[in-house]
Length: 217
Image (tube, rainbow, N blue to C red; front, side):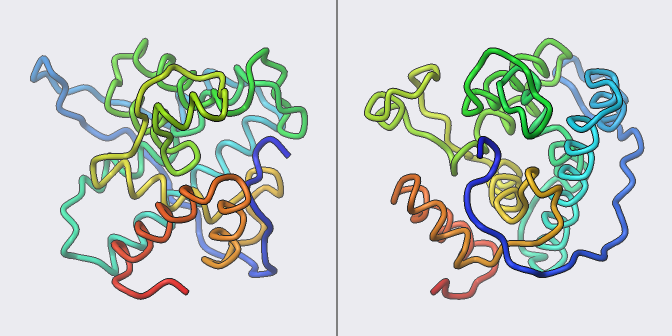
């Protein structure tokens, strides 16, 4: 399936959703801009399966990412930005062809990151746009794009900042295809990524060790 990287396990999710009110951001102009991530999603997607899956998935990724921050106070991250980016990281899926998510665009699903970056840059949200581009796979190197003939720009698209890495990590625990009904285990994520590309599994496990401080078996 276009949105699913690996299988899920039966772990019901019963967490309260994170509400995402407008949050002040410092922009390059030093002016303060208020953005509403949920409102941006609703503006670009009419009522239906795609909007519902995006909002559900964004909320779950925001919960997972902020839970990591709660357990790792040594991480220096912009918590407000993490929540915003969690809600917006998949906003480009509407430009891709993925029927099970209601997406009827012309592009391969692997392009949803670069399409999301373009959309958010048009809204003067370049930092959020980089999260979109760099979360796909577990980041994609230029040489991997060439070797696998991926329909992507030939450039390194790896998560670099703490916030980019955190969204990339948290995203892997949930599938939009099953509407986030179950949270994947680390082993399931590892095995699913390994089937796609061994280097993806290696990168994910490195992120897991960094964010949890525990060995990943």
